[in-house]
Image (cartoon, rainbow, N blue to C red; front, side, top):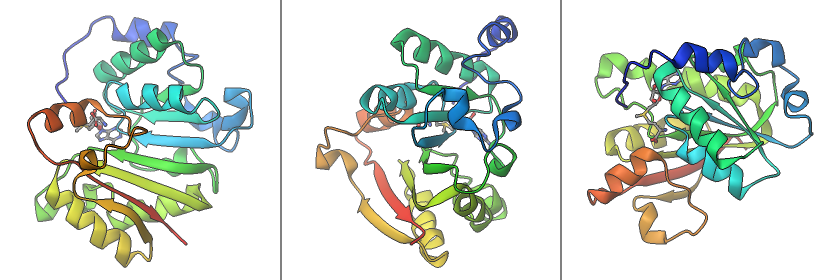
Length: 212
Ligand code: SAM
């Protein structure tokens, strides 16, 4: 995702700490308190400009959504999207999601969304793919027993790799499709990348996976 230098980003983040949470490790084991309710927690890794998490938050007001986005210049756009929508069930983390166990304890989340994650196509970069087995081990720890991973991508290579990796890890695959938009699912909330790639006629791949 293209990053533009935003000299106002630091000031914005300082003024919006109730939405873009500083030091998120302090909420580990206690995210529901941060949301002031006991609703289930869903996490999106690589939230981008926030279109998906905002749409999901509107669709599912009884879920607490946490979006993690590494790039400061991008997360400020996500925060503006969330604020403009007036949803209160979203928190954002401007963090590297390479070890979610820094921020979440065991069984703390019900769903992890991986939307259009960087594909890292070179073999030597396999360990960076968010469905590499070391990431799956983390997800298994922080998800509840019935928890699930939901993956969407336009990248066939990453999709095929992920199906194999998830299966090898012993996960059960569900709702696997090689053309999500052909299903016309009225509940599908599109991401920025999904809008962009589907407009070009590219199919969108999606699967859900559980550890049981
Ligand atoms: N999910 C959005 C969408 O579908 O439109 C954005 C997809 S973009 C290809 C991937 C996003 O993941 C980028 O915004 C990038 O900054 C973020 N990202 C990449 N690695 C990350 C990491 N380790 N932790 C958090 N965010 C990361």
